[in-house]
Image (cartoon, rainbow, N blue to C red; front, side, top):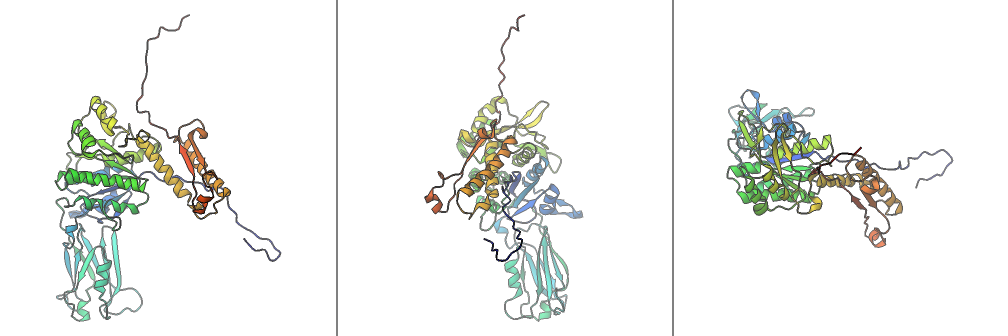
Length: 514
C-alpha cells in the first residue's frame, strides 16, 4: 500500500480492468528432412522460399544455389507449403552422425612465413556446404601485434572469436574455440613453434565441401532426435509457435532402403507422440509410396493402426514438376500444411481444411474412385481426388482417432487454438490472491475471448450461452484446493463440425392446387 505522510496531490496507476486474451497463431509448420547444405540438426525459421534456398541450397558454379538433394523431398515439401499459402515454418536438416570429423580442411599460412602453416581449420561433420574462414585484425585500442580475430561463416551463421593470441601462457585458444564452435575444428601443426609462426596471415580462406550425391545414412533414432541436444524431431520443442509437423523425407529414406517399414512406423509414431505431448501441434502423416487403395487400407488398419486425435493421413502422393522439368511424385504433407495455413488465414482454424485445391500439383499419383474412398474415409484416410472442372482437391478432413468426438481435423485444431490462447493470455493470474475477486476476473476474460470466437463462427449456437460455458467459483475451488495453491476453471465448448455428408432429399410433388 502507498504511504501518504504529507499533504499534497498523489497520482496512482490502477488496474485498467479486463486483460484481453489474444488468439495465438495456428499456421506455423515444422519440417524435418534432408537438404544439400545449411545448418544441421537444429530448427531454423524460414519465412519464404527464397530464404529457404539461401539457407539450405548448395552454392554451385555461377553463384546459383540449388535447394534440391537428389532423392529427397524436403525442398519440394517446403516449396509446396509456401505455394499453397504457408507463411512461415521451421526446417530441421538431419545429417548422419558418422559424417562427424570428415569435413574439408584448409591450412592458414603463418604471418612470419607463408610457407609455414600456422593453423589447420577443418569443417565439422555434416556441414554440407562451403565454409568461409576470415582472419582479421583484433578489436580494441592498441592490440598486440600477435593478436587476431577469427570469423567462421556458413549458411547465414557466423561465429566470431576476437583478440586471439598464443603469447599468453595457460589454456590454448585453439582448445577454447574447438569447444565453442559448431562449424569447425582447429589444430596447430607446429604447436611448439614461435608465436609469430603460429599467428595466421590475414585473409579469407574457403573450406570446399564435397557435393552431396546421396541421402545421408540415418536411422530412425537420428530423425527422431533428442530434445536435450536440440536435434531432429524432438529438437522442435524449443520452437514454441509450431502448430503442424511433417517429416516428408521419412519416405525418401524408405525408398533408398535406409529405413524399412518398421523404421517409417517408428518415426511416424514419434511424430504423433511429440504432438500429443506438446498438446498444441498436429502431425500430417504421409503413406508409403506406390500404394494402391487396397494397400493403403492394409497399411492403415493392420501395419500401423495409429489411433490419435493429433494426426491425420493423406493419400495418395501428388505429382509436381521436378527440377528437371519432368513429373515427380512427392509426399503430400508439405502441400497439405500449406492448405492448413491458407484455410486458417482465409476462413479460420474452425474451417475444415478440405474441399481445397492443391496448388502446384499436376495430378494425383493414384486416381481414386468414389467406391475406393468409401472404404478409406471411414478409417481416417483422407483422399486427394481430381474432379472434372474443379481441379485436384483435398477430399477428407478426418483425424486418425477412433473417438467420434475427435473425428475431424478442424475440431482438434480449434481446441489447440483455444487452449494455447487461454494459456498464454492468463499468465498474469499466477501468484495472484486466490479469492472470489480473482475468480470473477478470470471468468470475465475467458468469456470475452470465447464470445469473440463464437462471433467468428468457431462455436456452434445461436447465443454465447449455447456455444460455451465458463465456471470458476468456490464449488471448484474449496479451501483444500486453495491450500494446495491451485485454481480450477471449467470450460465447455460446442465446436462446429464440418458438413461432411450433404444430403438433398427429393420427392415428386403434384403442385399446389387452385
